Structure formats: structure tokens, C-alpha cells
Length: 219
Image 1 (cartoon, rainbow, N blue to C red):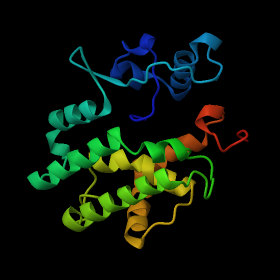
Image 2 (cartoon, helix red, strand yellow; image 1 turned 60 degrees about the vertical axis):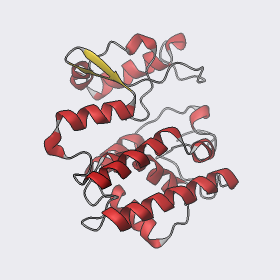
Image 3 (tube, rainbow, N blue to C red; image 1 turned 180 degrees about the vertical axis):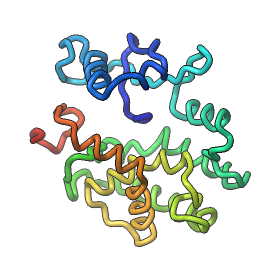
């Protein structure tokens, strides 16, 4: 949700409290009218509205997912959203920043699509290079900092949230992974929050061709 919710300029004033009070149906309706305002909420072609998520804290907006994550980690220190070890925390921030700004080959060739399966689609030199880099990041984090659990830094952290969309891509496109990387994917997919997120995605019925280039429609 934090990585992919698409909001137009008209939605910037929505507070987090307002969003939380919405029912699922109200949120879906609001989202459609925000994203496809020109067609009164009917899904159409993506025309370049601004992609923004804003968290409102004490009346002050915080935008960009990295800034939002830093704010949440700062305000809820007991949750240990970043690793407690200073060296691990430095690495976690770095791999999140790399995910945040990079991997365009993977993003472009293998768009996120939880509800479909497209084995082998999107594999090209650019996406393969990004996949190899992701696997290297995971392997290094797990080996250096992940001995106390099944996730990148042992217990759940912001880094796992950042790489969860990649995990779903690897499942969608049936990417063959080394055993350790696949074990990490399995651990992420077993998280309760990820399962709920994916279940909600599978219930979606809208089809937007730009978002699902390998599908002819959604049944």
C-alpha cells in the first residue's frame, strides 16, 4: 500500500485518520475517483498524475516512503523498525535507498502483479542484472545480520517491507532463485501482514492494461 497507492493533487489533504476511518468500499471508491477523475472513477489509461503518499503528523505532512518510514521509526522506537545494531542499521538504510531509487530494469519488465502468474515473462539482460543484485543484497544481509531470524536482519524491519514487492514479483514470474534467497521469499510470504495484503490484491476485479502488460484481462 505504502509503495503503490496512487494519489492525485486533490488527495494531498487527506489525513491518515480519514483514511483509517474509511470502509473498504469507501476507500476503493475514493481511490477510483482520485486516480481516474477524468472518467468519474472508471479505470482508464494512466496519464501521469502525481504519485504521492502523505502521512500527516501533528498537522504537518510527511511525504516519500523513506521519509515516512523514518518518521514512523522515530515516533515508535519500541517497534524497532530499523535494526538495533548501528552497523546493521546503516546497511538496512542503504539497501532501502537502493530499492527506492533503483532496479528500473526489474520494475519495467516485471511489474508487480499479485493476482496473476506469468512464468518467464520479463526476463531480459536488464531485469536479470537487477535480480542478481537483489539476490546479492539478500545474501549479504542474511549472512551478516540475519542469523537471529528468517528475515534480512533477523526480525522484521523496514528493509523487508521495501523488498516484499520484489518477493511477489519473483513469485509472479517464477524466477529461479538460489536456495537461501527462496527461503527468504518464503519467510516474507508467510508474514501475516503480507498474506492479508496479497489476499486483498487477489480480490481486486479492475483491469488496467498499463499495469498488467502480460494479461489480456482479469477474470
